[in-house]
Image (cartoon, rainbow over all chains, first blue to last red):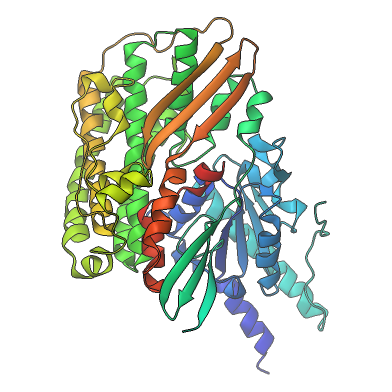
Length: 167
Length: 358
């Protein structure tokens, strides 16, 4: 059997997804729940999930909080620095739609106004179990997109949703 | 010597929050630090004109998720004073219990992050494991782990049953026992001392001039704690402000650890002395007039100014948070520090950026 390098890399990617976390105007409620996932009680390392600081090394981007006019460029930057294939998870009511701050003057809205989002996690804040589940759901989506790109070689995995930069 | 500018943040592994400092460095020494704020600004105070004063409680709770209960308590106190409501004693005690539990989990969170900042991973894990017990108490008594939403105008939303009060007593005794060995590590460990003793020193005078608040102020020898103003049920509870005198990272660290024990003790006292009775009084009409109220947050003095005009919305809600007061001391201690110490120094004021920028 021929050794398939790409298949080997893909398996590695799915086995141990590295996540990077960006606080995008959150009240810290979601952030401390994300950090909670890393600690002994929930311990996401048993799934091979490691929190890294560098977006270039990460497969999954966790975004918490509303997007505002100042940090939308920072969020876009971090997303652009990540390598394909990548998944984005919006965490908490604010990340979904703006939440309780939907009509505040400096709020653009949910994360999907700036970058495409794969998994939405509702809750204010969501429980750590929900966040772990979301990462696993995102892995499923990554797997599907990897298999798709295997069938049509040479094509870069494109983001699923259309990018709509906010005005 | 050549100067270069290094950005610290807004996305940085050590901070869960987008604090952005522009650091001018000469070789490895920081010469100047310029903060760039506004990454978390949502325009929360502006929402006061669009929400009625009951809905505003849920907005101010989301100023900061870590000390949400204390924000709501301060806002409710201000409105209650305007309306002349007498909150039942039991409600006051319940507010104290929840707010002190918030202080415990906030301090444990900070101590864990601080350990992580100088690379003490196992201490971080251990402290967060203990903190999980507090979160479980929150979930069991209020229904949510982080944002408990127990305060309403005139009292509290729900009661804690006698069984649960007994259970909390048992839990906090266990938390104390588990924390004691951690306190020894935090205060005696060689590595921690190397990273914290004599780092980021703020003298007593400088601290006062720059208007520091909370543990940053108490770490420099000022015995100032807003809980001494005897709001809520603090008039019937015994405690002394925790003070350390060296003004360095080690002192601030020690203040927070000792305050964790103090808060657990306050919870124990409150549970032992809690009276029975009503949970809330019903507010009538709309508040009118203006008022300022302050409480002690885990990070220091929290100040609310509320102006109402008799309508159903507050006219203005102004919030001054402790991290805002603690940023000038941070900028004063950064010049002269080594670049590798910047995460430790930045964390030593316990920055809460979402509070500061709202």
